[in-house]
Image 1 (cartoon, protein in one colour):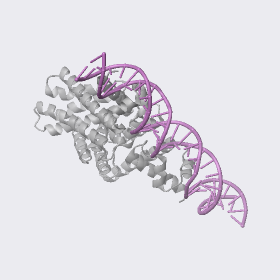
Image 2 (image 1 turned 90 degrees about the vertical axis):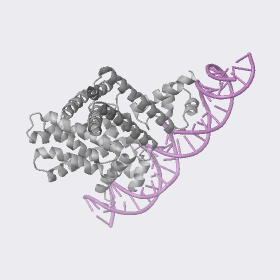
Image 3 (image 1 turned 60 degrees about the horizontal axis):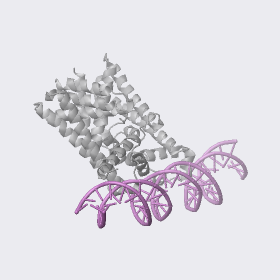
Image 4 (image 1 turned 180 degrees about the horizontal axis):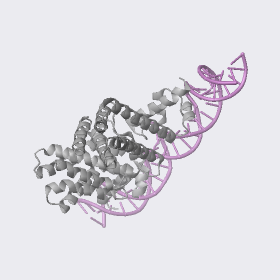
Length: 185
Length: 185
DNA sequence: GAAAATAGATACAGATCTGTCTACATAACT
DNA sequence: AGTTATGTAGACAGATCTGTATCTATTTTC
């Protein structure tokens, strides 16, 4: 396998296994076996497991937010509607086989110390997502864009947590209806 | 230490360490050291680590729901108000030093397979909490008590997730205001 | 095409994990 | 008081974990 591909392949494999088994339970040996790559290779790209976790979270963050943006932009042009369409993105995510809750919440659960770089990666991701909602709320012309963004964000988090445990997609549309009613007030 | 006390003491120590470090990262040796108990003693009470985890989650479930009930019942008598007071309970929980997000969401993150007993324990807890909200909604005389309960529940989950990452208590009151507006429609 | 960097395969070190075993001390119950 | 159950202490086994070292094969790059 070419060097240019292998790093991303390793990260994708790691993301999938961290998601499925958890960050501690998914060991290096499992990751290299799944990726069909030698251990030496992994350690040439990432000096430690923590570095691998951080790189995986970074990739997951950028990919996930990019996907949500694309999804939203192709389904609605009205900024107000776009805020609601984010819940349809959630629904599509929940419907995938690999959905096991938010990887950043799980990462924060396993690395809960405030000064842990993994926890900080989760904080960074959540801040970026909130900023996106605020961006949409501003574009929609809301005077209290900050509050609107926080509301959408809180509903997202709630829908994800419910879907993680109940293992069904309906919480996305349920949260969407709540959002619609709140935006109407 | 008396036998009757030691089991609960072990469970409380385990709960605290699982909460702080995560279920995989908190090892048996750490738990017995913190509890100041011999390893033999722990394994006389719990045959495996998984059994300890399950017993700890069961205790956490019963304790947490009992505390919320007590909190709510002492602060409001009107059933409608009680639904809102549950968010004040959240706020008090968030304000504790040990708050690191919902232990059951974290447990589900580390044991995400649907047939894993630990995951099932999380499902059980969430069902019970939802049933409590429904009980309050029924007492409040709402015709659509199921939907009201789901809304309160989703707002709770959202507030917990936000508080876990942002490390502040304000999401509880923020969710409470959202709940108030939703209940008014 | 040659030189340098990287991948593969695998053994290994050292730490840590769960769970067991042994030997002795203490508490509880008859 | 004496028997039984339980606690303490710690060594130990066996598995597993992260990370390193060695050596060969393959890519990349100049």
